[in-house]
Amino acid sequence: MAGALTEEFNPAPLVAPTRLTPRASFLKGRHFLSVNDLSTEEIEQLFDLTREIKLGKAQNVASGKCAALLFEKPSLRTKLSFSVGMSRLGGQALYFAKEEVGLGHRESVKDAARVLSRMVDVIIIRTFDHRNIVELAHYASVPVINALTDLEHPCQALADFYTILEYRSETRGQKLVYIGDGCNTAISLMLLAPRLGTHFTLACPPGYEPPAPLIAQARELAAWHSTTFEISHDPVAASNDADILYTDVWTSMGQEDEKAKRLADFAGFQIGAKTLREAKEDALILHCLPAHYGEEITEDAVDSPQSGIFDQAENRLHVQQALLAAVL
Ligand code: CP
Ligand code: NVA
Image (cartoon, rainbow, N blue to C red; front, side, top):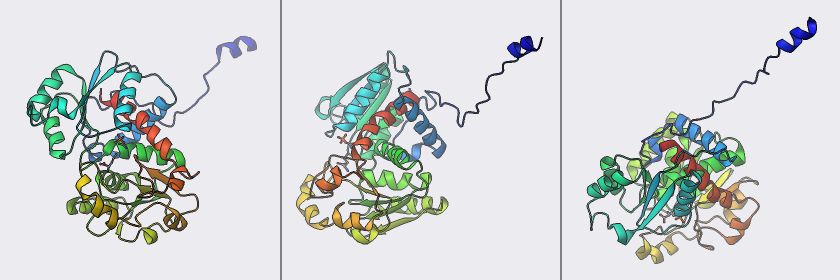
């Protein structure tokens, strides 16, 4: 009798999940033009989904679906990661270079949005003027994802903070020092950092700060989330006690005419021996790539054991695959 009872009474072990597995499509139909388009909770859910995808859990959610990649600027990582991500989800990606679509020239942004929406399931676009992407999203009935504009690089920032999370297990309380131009990459990072509890310092030459309204927004977010936001013109002093040193090219795509002036103005705004000496001993080195050795970063810094740069590049794939799974 006692034996029979033991056999019948065989409860499953009580294992409480720390967080429910996020479902694919939890952002179904949503655009992602700016880091501001996702709530902090949605970003955390996206990181959970990324973790699962990186562990190889199948998400065949794009079967029979198609992404259009409209790229008006060159790309290695973004084009590759969205294409591979879409294919790993069981779908496919079609790439269009600038001259093929002629957005705003051969065809209005409005008409391109309406035609694309009839044939594809998601539009991924890299363009110059951020207003193009806003207009495209306005007229598109499928999700539009910002693959970089002159104003923001939000997919990059997602992958960057996911990488920080992997290295540090926590984004809260980290001091991120960004050395370089107040460009698209810096803007997406400075707007996202406070919401993930990260202190943010931008070290740039005078005159290379992001637009004033965005600085005001970053300050307000930092105050709200009790993080710090600073702008410095001294890269070495700014690097003091940094947990993370981050940089990007001094001359972004589309600014080639300013290259000579920028080379002079940015001298010293580099991740290298001087700034690394000031940062914490185990400071994580990040760069969105492509890198220009000897300008914004030394080759030694890229190759250093402290560098997380190639994990960061790889994470573009996992985070964007999760983003695709979420919006499709
Ligand atoms: N970091 C980044 O967006 O790289 P690509 O310009 O090569 O896509
Ligand atoms: N700020 C750079 C990022 C490249 C990924 C650019 O816009 O060219």
